[in-house]
Image (cartoon, rainbow, N blue to C red; front, side):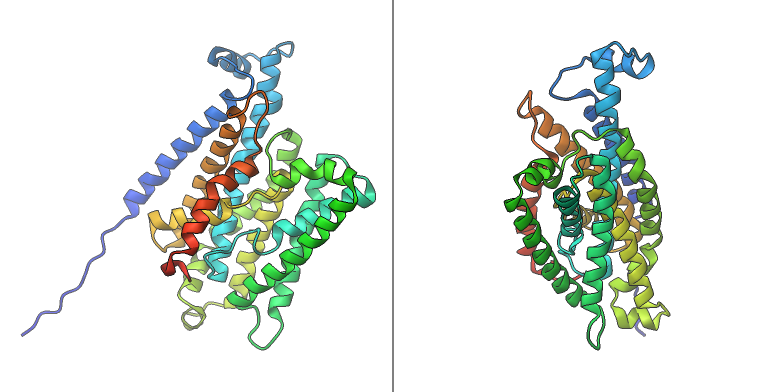
Length: 343
C-alpha cells in the first residue's frame, strides 16, 4: 500500500510581517535623513531645536519647517502612491511592464499642465495639481475606451498597446507645444522632469485626501488582484466579476498615479521597479505585495531625493533624474528575463 504524501508549505506570514516592521523602520530612517541632509548643512542640535522650539527668526528653523518637512512628507506620500499604483496596474493588466508612464497617465498629466501654462498663462504650482490630476484621469479613460473596442473588450494586451499608443500621441503634442513656446518650457521644465523641490505644505495637503482614498482602495483590491493573477477564466469560475474588479483596481491606480504626478511631476521607474522587488520578497500574494510596495517605494524615492541634494551642492539633481538613473539598469535586466514575460 502506497501512502500519499503532501507537501506542506511553510507559513511565511510571521517572517513577512517582521519584514514589514523592518521596512517601517527604514522609512523612518530615510525620512530622518531627508529632514537633516541637504545642500545647506544643518547640525542635529539645530534640527532638534527647530522641531521642538521653532524660532521664526532662525534661517535653519525656517528651512526645516518650510522646505524639508513638506518635502519629506510629500516624498512619503508620493512614493507610497507610485509603488501601489505600479503594483495594482501590473496586477490588473497582468503585464510586468505596466506602470503609470506606460499606460498614459504621466503623458495625460503633462499635456494638461502644458496646455494650462501655454493657453491660460498659469504659473502657480498649486494650479498644476488640479490640471495634472484631471489630465491623468482623462488619459487613462481614453486608454481604457480604446482598449475596450472590439469583441474581447479591454484585455491586458490591448490595454498595454492602447497605453503605448496614447502615450506616444500625447507626448508628441507636448513636445510640439514646448518647442513653439519657450515661456511654457521654462515654466514647466522642473515639474516635467519630476521633483520634490519647491513643494510646500499646501501642495501636500491638496493631494493628501486623494492619496488616502487611493491607498485604501488599492489595499482593498488585493483579493481581486489575487483572483486576476490566476487568469480570467479561473477568476470567473471562482465567482469574481472580472470587469468590475479590473475597473475598481484601475480607478485606484489612476487616483494614486494622478495625484502623485500632479504633486511631483512624472517620476519614472518607481512604479515599475518596486513591485517586482516586493514580489521577489513576498511571492505572488498581493495581500503582501501591496503593503511591501507601499513601504519600499518611499525608501527609494526619498533616498534618491537625498542623493540628488548632496551630490552637487549648492545645487541639486532632481529626483526624477536620479530615479531614472537607478531604475534604467533594473528595467534592462527586467526585459531580459523570460520568466517575467507575464504575471
